[in-house]
Amino acid sequence: MADNTPVKESEELVNSKGLNFVEQIVADDLAAGKNGGRLNTRFPPEPNGYLHIGHAKAICMDFGVAEKFGGTCNLRFDDTNPVKEDVEYVDAIREDIHWLGFDWGDREYYASDYFPQLYDLAVRMIKEGKAYVDDQTSEEIARQKGTPTRPGEASLYRDRTPEENLDLFERMNKGEFDEGARVLRAKIDMSSPNMHFRDPIMYRIIKTPHHRTGTKWNVYPMYDFAHGQSDYFEGVTHSICTLEFVVHRPLYEYFVKELADESYCPRQIEFNRLNLTYTVMSKRKLLQLVKEGLVDGWDDPRMPTISGMRRRGFTPRSIRNFVDRIGYTKFEALNSVALLEHAVREDLNAISTRVMAVLNPVKVVITNYPEGQTETVELENNPEDPAAGTHSMPFSREIYIEREDFMENPPKKFFRLAPGGEVRLKGAYIIKCTDVEKDADGNITTIYCTYDPETRSGLPGSMRKVKGTLHWVAADTAVNATVRLYDRLFNVENPGAETERDFRELLNPDSLKVVENVKLEPYIAENARPGEHFQFQRVGYFTPDYDSKPGNLIFNRTIALKDSWEKEQKKQ
Image 1 (cartoon, rainbow, N blue to C red):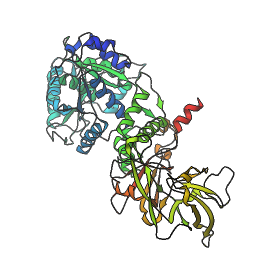
Image 2: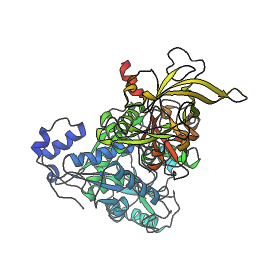
Image 3: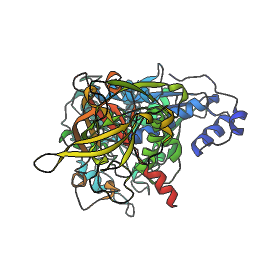
């Protein structure tokens, strides 16, 4: 399966600038001619949940370094635990990687592809006296392994003969023993200072059918045994992973050397994982949120999953730009979610169509505008993109503005609409408030204004200045919609570090607010397709939800206009 295509000239790689430490290692190895000048990385997700933003960082590294140096990257599903795995997760992982802009070509593999070779290697190690079957329970094994400061104790079963071990292992795979009754352990060193070397488990009994191999196997390899060997079988040259695997690396190398020689051997390299404020990255906790109905599935827009971010309206480029900004180091850090939001906002600002939507409408009647008359105004689609053009929007005697944009008794420096005050309606006219109408409870139901017909945008009178500009929607052509306002899922900065409270107690009760009866300009409804990005002027960035359809329009707020990251930077 190895790809023998050599990469670019190594001297060019060594002389290239701006490499992170992983890229520099790769460049040095290529310059030294290791592995015949090949570069083959892999992304090895477990199909036991949806990918999240932390996986996106790994994807950008694994696929990105292969792209940068002309190598290849495999997609390999680490499907060694059928109890937790599902085809749904396999499909979702493929979709997420493609959405981020990467492709593995015909190099899709599974750890289960190598079950026969792994089993044969285990048999060989048993015959060579390097592995044995242990009858202890998991609790007993954990106790006798000792502590980092106290050596472990040898299992009573450690000195079984190779013949007895081989017989027991084969019977384990035939299903003769219950789950948990026996395991296969490597015979290494019970006094090693590295706890992972203290006779690690290689195989355990699992009788749940596998999504690819069915009931063929009753024993399944552990990650530490399967991972390095799978890398070797595929021809992977650089096995790039996160820092928690540093202590696993000696064991990785120990097992790989059972197969490799001087001509080719995979190399494990570790970088810091992505930790994000107001977010949990534990797949177990995310699954708990889904199963307990605390979120609306793996693709809930509040989730840190790639599918959730896609549904919320994040773009692949914004995520990749964020990953580039935080970089790769050997030191763990807690990254501010505000930087991710800044990257999203920055990208959406460049590509989103500017439109008008009123979330909390109050009616305005322009008393001196002719009844029954309608005209159109032209609005710029995106000031950041001169080629984006314009679109038309209807204007009439009755419009909606935001209720918060009017105050009867405004404070100083309130530059929106007030009795006797003037504001400009964006793209249209200057209006002046003359009166209000209220219901029996004193709530304003209608605002009455006059307009200055000489102040329409584009006319000479449009140069007249007023301090406030409001967004608006014509009442007779407005389209109703539902808007979901999403906020951070947790209300503490580092929910993963909390030990005294259950993480579910830290959920933000205001992470989702649903607003009905939102008024949209017709252009939005006509272009409300999944994947479209809009800036609701003065409100935020929005995208149509997957559930949105004509007659039942639903929009998700991707992010607000305010950029807290830029504010933080200015303070420093």
